[in-house]
Image 1 (cartoon, rainbow over the protein chains, first blue to last red):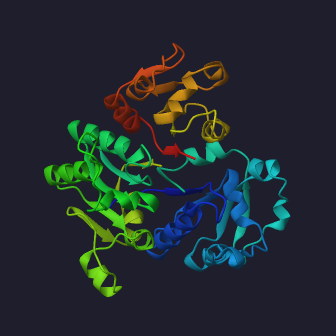
Image 2 (cartoon, chains in turn blue, red, yellow; image 1 turned 90 degrees about the horizontal axis):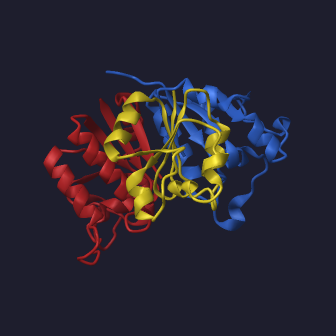
Image 3 (cartoon, rainbow over the protein chains, first blue to last red; image 1 turned 180 degrees about the horizontal axis):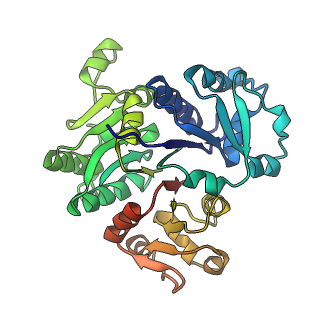
Length: 121
Length: 129
Length: 93
């Protein structure tokens, strides 16, 4: 059986677009099958990482819970595009996922090119 | 080469399903393999047996079914995304006590593991958003 | 080397700008669907990456002329571009 080296590219802000949630669900499902992809948050996807999200009043479950499950499924490094944070005025020090290390990526193009397969969410 | 396609667009709402069909036909004509087509997000509507476009418009669901029959394709609709959007097989409709089922012939409902499996076992994965 | 596929108009979506922001040497760009609107107006000169491919069927459907700086291709060439490149990244929002 061949196994390719897969990257999940998370580009959507949470709540406004179902793809943010469905992307994390797909990542967790893959990880549960021992096929954990690398994960890169890029562009508006970095908004998924903001602490203190409280979406219950808009009728949604917090996406942070899905994010916090990533290390439990073996995804212990979360890659984040440095420039996307900068453009959105987000300080990387604000971001923390228990059990996971946040790794800033400066050269996203070079990073993406290191994978066989990219799933875009 | 082994391809898998991931489709997020609903037919007749976005162009992506029609584009994916063209791409699928072309790669098969070139002798490549299509390991799986995975319908996710609003793409699950590609598997609706109740889609009834006017006769002078493209029948995307019917086109997928025809391609599936011709090539024995694995057309997988994500079960979690499908349940949320109201696309159910007979057994799911019974289990969830819903009044009707609408999964078209030629498609199957399966879990997200099938997307991970497609990515692990294909040389190329192309997403149609 | 990555094949980037952009399917949204650069006039209404950041898809093309986001894609160009992650472009690496040796990568290729393919414009499909509404992504072909990059052929209109001032955009071609602004795409300082190469090579740029444009799906001719999709440009023709929209009444667009594919500029000489883009390579107009058919679906068969699209499949072969996918064979020649990996990974393939789609930019669709």
